[in-house]
Amino acid sequence: MGDDPYCEDCRPSTRARWKEIQHLLVGDSVLDIGCAHGDGCEFVPEGMRYEGLDANVAGLPFWERYWRPYERERPNRRFFECRIEDWLAWPEMVAQRWGTIVCLETLEHIETGLAIAQRLKIHCDRMLISVPYLGQPGSNGHVLLDLTPEDFPGFRRINDERNHTMFLQWDRKE
View 1 (cartoon, rainbow, N blue to C red):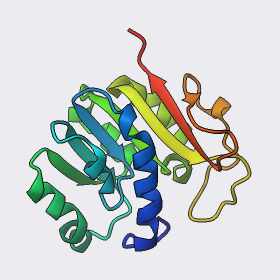
View 2 (cartoon, rainbow, N blue to C red; view 1 turned 90 degrees about the horizontal axis):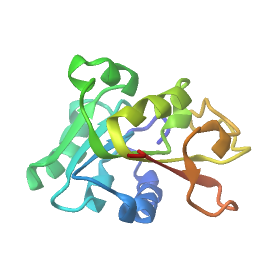
View 3 (cartoon, rainbow, N blue to C red; view 1 turned 135 degrees about the horizontal axis):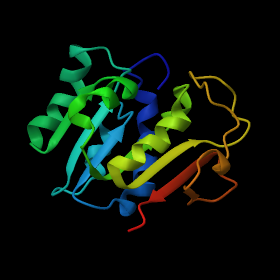
View 4 (tube, helix red, strand yellow; view 1 turned 45 degrees about the horizontal axis):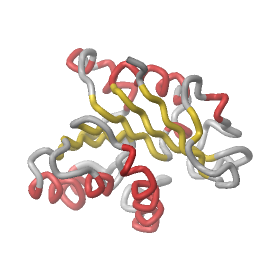
């Protein structure tokens, strides 16, 4: 999304990524980290609880323009404006769990993104992430570069290797 939280040009690619993974959602709840405009909640089945988290928003105007309409339409949709690192430190989050955690095109923007991916595993039954694959330039705020599946222990790649976006999945083993 870059530095502009209102970036409407980003929405089609976000929606395309959600279309690609929506059939992989499990459980009764979804946490969408880096939710941007909140478009992901449209791809979550009606009965599932959806929570979106993003730090790159412009406060109340963004909230009113994008998030509030989703919350009004569906009471089981909620949004939080917060950095994931801060959010994970909240005492009430220690025991929180979701069926699926989704993190699309977000971790590469966070210096501790690889560690965060591992840390989030205790909070879900399935995690779905997407990051740029190999050789992507450090533009658009990327701080983690040249990512490969090996950077994400326990995850497996679930899309074509020729694709510049790498989709990865992790599942809790019972």
